[in-house]
Length: 182
Length: 176
Length: 103
Figure 1: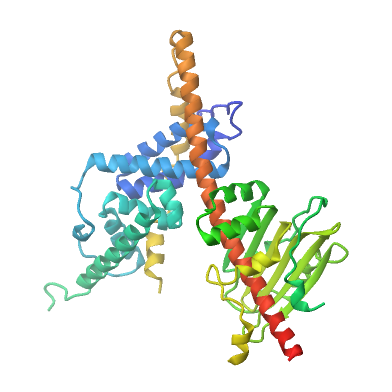
Figure 2: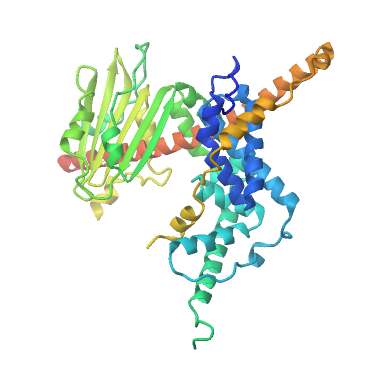
């Protein structure tokens, strides 16, 4: 029998279990796209909700909850990514490319894009994820990450230019002559 | 009274009863729109917004002065992929709450250039004005504005030239 | 053909965590250790905890209030731009008609 949701405290009008169900995809996906490690992303997502439960009394509205979750998830995922340092810090221009993929359709293009995004430096990656997963505008991204909006705009612009360039190279490589059949 | 004079009124509220937001139903249009802008600011959010508007920025200072006494600002703008997504009956449903004796249409202007019609309504409350409503309809766009409270139409129009809105210069238009 | 940004949105779309995610979170919440009663019985500990909680609440609320304020500011600027633009257009038309009738 699944465990029952803890009863909301008198100070909180929120049903915690509903909040988890409503926002679990968002929290997990931000963590997943920033960390590209399913197990770590799951654990981080659980920790975020545990913290939410501890801070539930401070939440003023549904919108506040959303803002809080995005902020905490992004910042914690960035902390974990920096600590893990699976790849050394690289500038945008030297981010590694995935193995060339065959352009057989959108799913593979999507896979290539995901890998390219994952190879971006952490802050740029977070900005791209918040922009294209959560559809936030630069001002909202700036508030979530606690950085100037100018930084968000310039990093986003550079990241997109780099992604486009690297994607076209990857697709270009894949559409070249097939080895052994020349 | 010259038509232009109607738009240069500075309207002050003098102890009138609290104004109410116009009850419009947007469900049908929202379902058909390809894009929607939705601004809903009640009194408390307006007061909060004014705290964040800068006195040093000329445009923001002007907006701060404009919205200072307002009780609500509501804007819905719908964009459609093709013309014909809303009907005259839809427009009539938005006009319906804006009838005398509370409301009065002060302007109905049509532009042949872009096919846009703009209707401006003001709400009377006692001796003063308690609100403004605008219905702006174009073939692929419909915008509804409702401002609750004492609104200075002079200031709102004066914002032409700010925020990328072209200034009105009728003499230049005539010389074209 | 989808644009580059559409492809990015598709690639970065939200994913569901495992099916039992919610149950696992609730289980962890239920199993979270209860604070030691003896420790919290010390008056000074209770005061420190209360002040810390109040500060946390204040900071959290302040941050959210700032976010709300900035958002309300962007919205009012947008609303004034839209309303002012429409009003300006109507005024322009009226002034042209008035000028024509006076000339």
